[in-house]
Image (cartoon, rainbow, N blue to C red):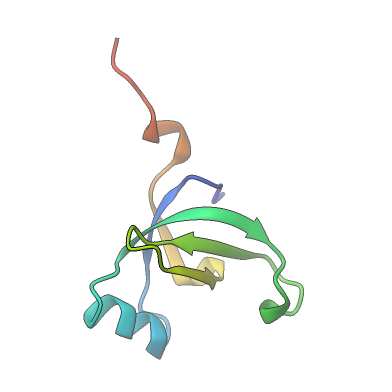
Length: 77
């Protein structure tokens, strides 16, 4: 299950995603919000943020998890 704070990779599932990956080198994103935006007709979407400040709404098929939230702030003792 994808949660806020997870680090995800944008998949080349459509032309815009392929363009972001190839031309702009935007592969790795962070999930910042989970909601049902109007653009997806009431289905769940994920607002993702690239380190450059670019935000984008995507669906679950457009991303794959690289690092879960629980592991992001893990500290060794």
